[in-house]
Image 1 (cartoon, rainbow, N blue to C red):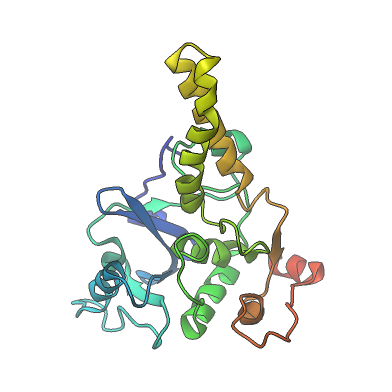
Image 2 (cartoon, rainbow, N blue to C red):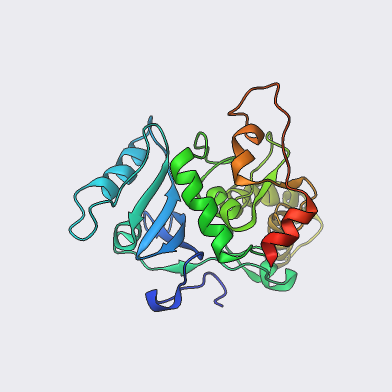
Length: 254
């Protein structure tokens, strides 16, 4: 596993894997679930953004290999594409699950791993294909993005606090970096060395990412994909959120 990312060959990925690639010269990463047969299910903006239009057009334009590449339901941001169109000639990376806290903290960039443990591949694929047919709500950069989609497919976990940062490590990094710099700025009067200030800032940044990781957060619940609409507020406001019982979770792990 690399310090920044985990680049892999296509022959190394398996159905149910959480994969990602970088866009705009490593400015951000785009995540999805590899479901086998050179196909990826992922989540993107539907409308109201030029980036969304570019993402969709890049997937739905006539694929020379797979006629169903770019399939999505109307008004849904969940898309089925072939691996080539998903990558857009970019490199392929594998998102790591069940990493130790020390490995997580050593990662300079967020959105590459989590301490949370993945569910079995068949459950991951089931969630991805179900969401392809039912949608994943509205896209939100900080609350409900492509990484959040892939993390949910892999773990079935949702955050209860909808006003804070979602499950995405990438979003946590965007928020955590300036926050760490702000909190450490008064220390420049106490720590004369610029290197010392930089070290403290880096430590605060890593700890802020760790605190928002779904593997350690206390505000996450396990939700069945069939009940996801209710939990995300797509259903009636009078309906209660339905959470998977521990017995059901154990059955899925078998």
